[in-house]
Length: 286
Length: 113
Image (cartoon, rainbow over all chains, first blue to last red; front, side, top):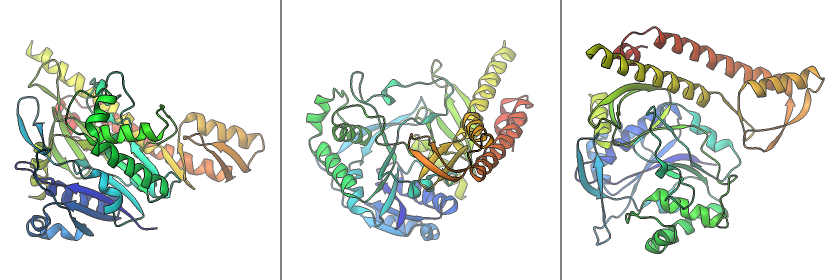
């Protein structure tokens, strides 16, 4: 069976997802040594700007993106004191099944930092589908209930940030269901009592999983990813990347604009502050 | 007062750094074999040791961390592997823990190598 990691990278005016994807590809090559594919609406930019790192990318998959009336905008924070409202091109995730060049695929957000090889265990386990469920917050005290359930009285929350699938009739059905939920998102949003109107992959995946679990909470399927994902939100700031060590300024929730410092080493981290991630990548490559 | 605030930040960073080290230790203390996942802890180690002491060594069925049964061909060898992983991670956890414990400033805690 062929194995690899698929990344989606669609740039907007301010955030360079392609740069994040190329940086992540180099980390994957270093720690996991498996194939990497980047699905992007900016393949020319990727080839032109990141020529010296392109060897880390095995496949570049061009995808079309057209600005339509349904194009979403989202508030992206850079710590607690700065934010920007930017285009959010996040609706391709449901096509991972058709786009992947591999039989077994790990799909990661480009703002995930891979610092060990533990995700490789996905390829040698029997489950056809794995998804992140309960990441470890790097913050000492934060507990955000919106990461437990997709709304107060609704179903379990799954993170589409990192998932694994093996091509099979069941995962094909899962991705068809994901596509169906995405296409009829307003209906499902109301049915599942989701207040935000923006389409979010985590919600779409959570709803599809709930449907395929017979509309029941199912603690046996899907199983969690093998490596624990550590996470920081966009209220935190990534300060420095040194090899596998990452240092963060963590939001002091009761004192906006104040931070405490902590570092993690050798673990995979979902770093939601894309601006600080971009700055640290520039610094690491300098 | 400035010193008190500085010390407060130091304590937050120190305690959180200890927690993150423990989380990393838990993340690392996992053994994958034949598609099965075993979270290695004292319970698993003691259970394997007890079974061996009672004479169960070949083709022993145990439950993995995802509640699936797994037939271990040689339990003694399995125990050696998980003990090796556990002790190696525990030593690394111990070293890191004592490094940060001896640091006296926020900067030293996050900058130590």
